Length: 170
Image 1 (cartoon, rainbow, N blue to C red):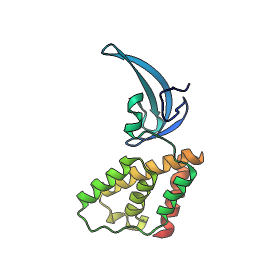
Image 2: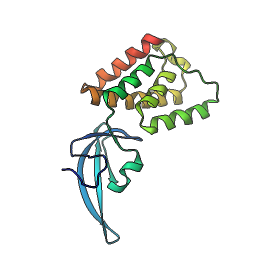
Image 3: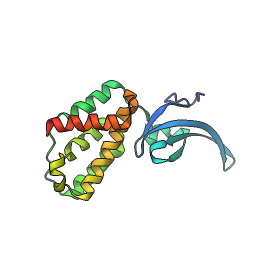
Image 4: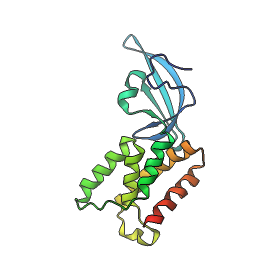
């Protein structure tokens, strides 16, 4: 079912990316009466988080909701993983805020930058703080979920492929 007023041309079953939650699937479109007016909504199911989100249709564009990246955009994100990490000298709290902002942008290239910059090989994991590790894992999960969805592969395989790319650089 398509909605005429939907700029994204969403359909039930489409995979989409919501910036703060990652990849979800359009489950339904519905209408609710609020303050006497009918409002159209889209419901997105984030199976990996066991969560559903209902967004007003008129807010979808401003919310950052988007369709999955195309293969070219994803290829750009993967190429970022092959680059040397950007070493920032700012205080951790400032870097952490910037990393969180990049993750919540929903842009796979910006998320890939976070993954690249925070990736540590297994033998250097003890050099990573708890909060650094949490931000890294959040970014890696978001990127691997979208990669898996675009390539139509298992999420664990996608994550392993991304980590293999990262380990070639470090």
